[in-house]
Amino acid sequence: METTNLTRSPDSDKPLVLVLNQQAKYFLHTAGKWASFLGKLGFVTAILIAISAFFVGPLFSVMARFDQVPQIPWIGGITGFVAIVVAIFYFYFSFYLYRFGRGIKRGVTFQSEAEVASALGKLKAFFKLWGITTIVLIALYIMIIVALVAAGPALQQAVGTNSAIS
Image (cartoon, rainbow, N blue to C red; front, side, top):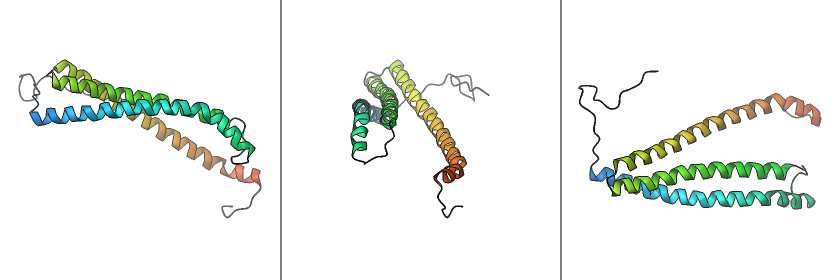
């Protein structure tokens, strides 16, 4: 893989310097405010998801007594576990977003190049986590679809129904 030198201009040996005008600084500061807000909202949501995970098992047990859901004994535990995993991911997404927002606001306000660079590093981590999570979920979806298509005939035979598919 070819690496690009981002410290020198391609046309000369002069070092590159990025200077932001007032409009760009305003946009970054406003983006920082929204990122901070969404990060804080994400923390609250992650906590609510985690708390709700502890009520899913008992709720499904009560619903199973009234024949509202299929009576699968472990469904509440699996659903609770998935909710905890979602809460953890939601927390990390919110954490990176909040850190970006806080850092970019301080960096722009105090004209701190180090603070802006650190904040942009948090934004990079946010998008990297988002990208990896997306790739993993797409792969998981594909595996589930392939497994369901492969298991379809066996499930149909096990149930013993004659449908229009056969």
